[in-house]
Length: 286
Image 1 (cartoon, rainbow, N blue to C red):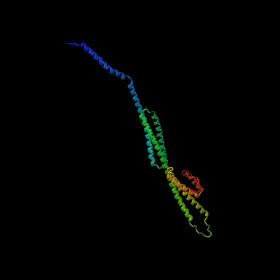
Image 2: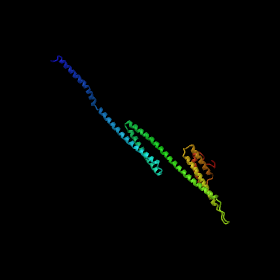
Image 3: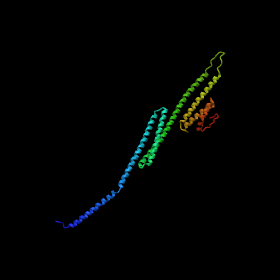
Image 4: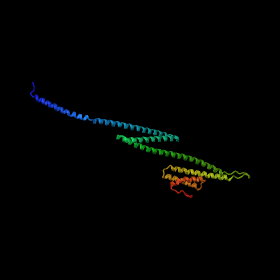
């Protein structure tokens, strides 16, 4: 049996099919227009290019950081050797090696600075700037360490010079004692034909004693001057030691044994007077 509303049912079916096709055509058309252009492919290409650039910049940064780290390790190894080394020749060679490593670090930092200006990733530029700032602080600290090390070596040389002067002072005092003993020794009594001892020998011995005494006083005054140079400029201890050294030098100038000694004292007093603000001429007064 056929239904009575068959024409209406056919009409409703065609309407449903048409509505269904329209509803299906809208998302299909949107998908077609969305995926048919090259925006996603371009975005993928851009992201891939940015990823490759990131990997390249990271590889350069890692290589430069490794090179700087190797130089720092070499400097630390050289510093460890210098601590227990007493040979001056070896220490000078180690100092030159450290300076070469510091120059290599300066070259590496210059290359890193040039590369950071061409980097496209902001995080990489920030990391490079931080590394450059830290290494600038390290180089400044390193220069301070080198200056202090040179000052320490200079003070060690001054200490050895003072020890040498002390030994020479002891020897000179021993010679003075021996000469004074020989002068105070009574002359042997001879017969009527025995000639008296020549006075020239006695005057020569006295001149030698006076020269030795002035040399001892000069060495002691010069030792005070060297001790003063170990203190900071314009410090109270430095000025006191320079004043004591100047007083000792001027006491020798009251009656110097030789003219050469007098000239040496005057040359030594020139920088002392200049630092203390004293007049260059004394006229026998302090």
